[in-house]
Image 1 (cartoon, rainbow, N blue to C red):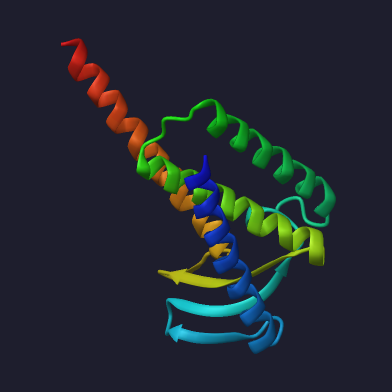
Image 2 (cartoon, rainbow, N blue to C red):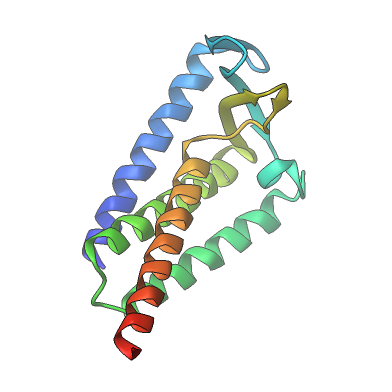
Length: 156
């Protein structure tokens, strides 16, 4: 549990610093091209969740985020023998969830800035906390698939 919380704190700090820098260095709704026709830094404020769903339901989203964080902590507490990669994955998940929760509580919105365009498709703008959450799910899915393969192999 301590490893997971340490990872989470690191990811919260990295996320928070990135959002402070973006809000201080870039004008709201303005973009900076990093890689033309692919990657931009665009400072936006999101009052919703992913893809701006549930916009303007900040406090509902904050309560849901808080409950998810509590459930993750409870799950980690009840499962003390995690592998190192699981500590990292849950640290990413907690760091991402806490990072966006902090924004909602302080500002009433989440600071988003990573703007990706692929083959003329403009993805919704996101932030590092969102990336941490997605990466954590990818790691956990891969670990679960590996675990399933190992169990099936042992049964043979």
